[in-house]
Length: 154
Image (cartoon, rainbow, N blue to C red):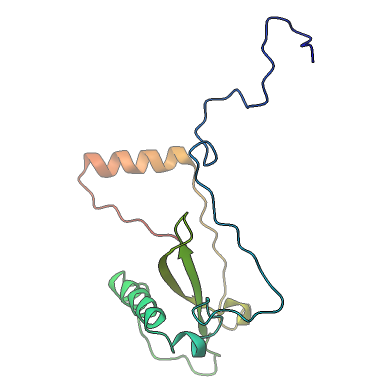
């Protein structure tokens, strides 16, 4: 095939210099699913009842609970009268290394916010949004005034 631009070489490879997983030869193992076999016993559970049967999931739940307590995520208060209490549930995820081996077991305790009703168990909504310039200014202030910085994923 002739190039419409004779001075430019024809290549099948992208010309950018970005390092990608493919260029680094990092690939995820191909997962072959079968409709005829059952899931392995160590698969990721979708209920607390299934997770609690395995030591590694109990350990993951314990680590999550201790992290929530350490970060003072909530304050225990008496339940308000005549107000429904929101429940919570555990979610589970098995994290894998690029070679397919299990890296760790992750458990998260999440609120069942879909049960909320405006005026009953919440009265306002809040969606925090910040610009990168605001974050840079706050980090600069914190650095100059020796403030403690904490990070939280929501």
